[in-house]
Length: 337
Image 1 (cartoon, helix red, strand yellow):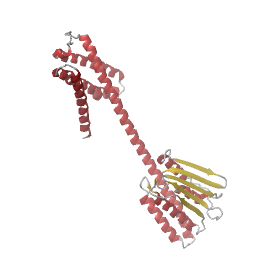
Image 2 (cartoon, one colour; image 1 turned 180 degrees about the vertical axis):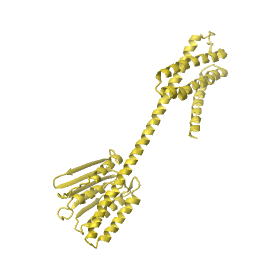
Image 3 (spheres, helix red, strand yellow; image 1 turned 90 degrees about the vertical axis):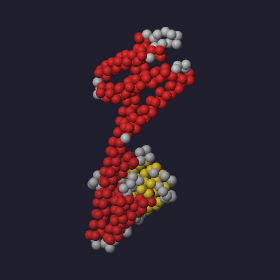
Image 4 (cartoon, one colour; image 1 turned 90 degrees about the horizontal axis):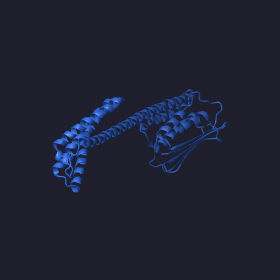
């Protein structure tokens, strides 16, 4: 079906071109209708045939295979053959083609050179079109391959988030269960809500910002339970939360690291989390006091993950500044949603 449409549009194009030249010439010339038919329709079909011989046969058979010598030779033979063929047609319709208005006869040499130049033009036109089409198709294939690569990489990066988060959360709940804490059921319930969001609501490329913020709040509540409600977090949201969209599971890595590496049980130095919204601009700020005896031996999967996702999903639309001081750790992230 697609090929049929291509043929249809090619026919429409050539018929339109020939019709246009016939109308223009008829309005500005005294050539008879029979002469117009011979000059534009008969010779037009010959030149169009030359166009497609090069486009569909010579270029794929020789030029695409880098047989430049054979391609040049084939063009030379084609120009000669079509030149002779055009002269043969001219002899048949000599009164329209080979006779000047003054009554002089056009010589074979003059006509052949003119016919060869016309043939070269159509060969050049078909070659240029072939290169243009191939370039366009190649660009489209490259874009498709790049999109597939990015989709696969994003899927892999996202698949890393769930095990990483689940690993940390289960460790926390295990600690509560080991201590026979009464908050263990509540922690399991919070984890269930978080996992439901991660598994069912965060599969789209972007989610409602309000849902993502609720997910962060659930995570903070789960950590407070783990700390026996002795975790001090100053979490503020400024600005209006409307219909903004955000890539899911983007900010959680920073908050995870704040609890994992930071001091959360000191009321004088709480973990500070600020999200400031200004229309489609989001500014995230995080600051925490560092726990000097808690190091991540896993290689910082979370932060490496989120940096790569930012590069892929917000190219040129974000800025990330991290200050890793001896006693404090701060992070500022600005995104155009």
